[in-house]
Image (cartoon, rainbow, N blue to C red; front, side, top):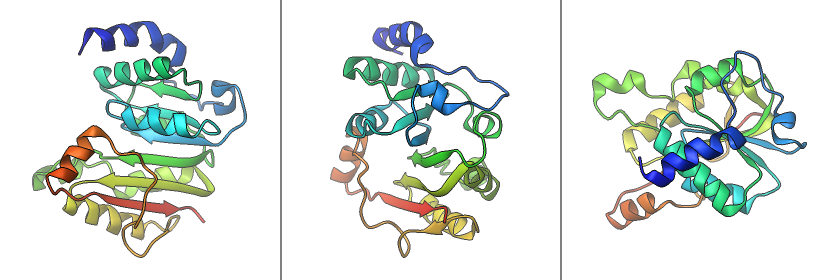
Length: 206
């Protein structure tokens, strides 16, 4: 954790952070306005989150991340860019969905490059599983979307199969999404140069 991340976490979390609670959030009150609400699960170092929030000031973005360096990094980006449409919860995503996000609340969900847990014996730890998707879908409004991305092919295919089996969601493409307005991170750029492929999936709640 860098000194800048540490300072941002200490100084900015009180302003942009939302403490974990067992009660459902009033997201309009959290952001101070009525606007589409997008949830990002596992925002890493926050590069993509800040970029999307800057490009789409008409939306509000609620990011969930457990790792303090990443939270500090996003908070620094938010302050440097003067963003007013980003809030952060530093807590487990499943518990946040269970307790803090009311049903039929979200206009969109981003899950970009979740931990692939590459060893077969660890696949059960992967985030994208049927019970999780059912919970997530219940928190989405009709017409809301969920956008996932990964650079692990077998996880991409598991995601596709699991999402396709969730009755509350429908694929927007035949298989993987062909195009994406998701900004690329420096990590992703390096991977593409090395020949790594990225798989995107976009499903909607009819």
